[in-house]
Image (cartoon, rainbow, N blue to C red; front, side, top):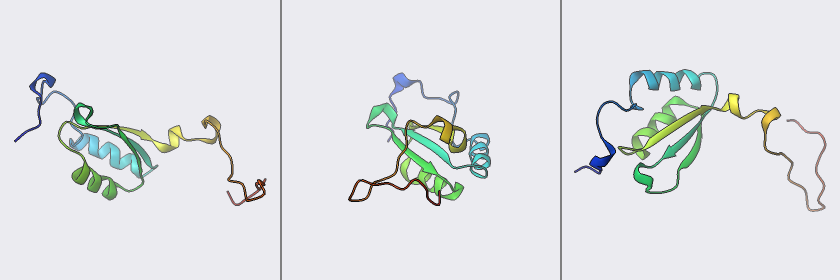
Amino acid sequence: MSNRYEGDRWGFDAPSISSPERLAAIKQALEQSPIIVEHRFYRGSCAPDRLVFEDYEVFTEYLHAKVRPGDSLWFWRFDQLCRDDNCLTHGKFPDTDGMVPSGGAY
């Protein structure tokens, strides 16, 4: 039994995330940086999930357990996108008096 909608032109021409080349690129990126993954569900069955992976084995476990035929996965390197010079905003959580530290171990 398949969940294919034939109007989506199923075949071998579209990129497959399980191709050795794509998996090798993901593994290589994970050796240098965490990756951000957007998991888009086939035919929009629900809103996309956004996850961060730091380990290739954890990623492949997710791939085999949570991803279904037709789902689309998009990847970005965390270190190239999430930098101090391009953040939307940042701040520290205040204590009960509303005060935050100017310093810290970070």
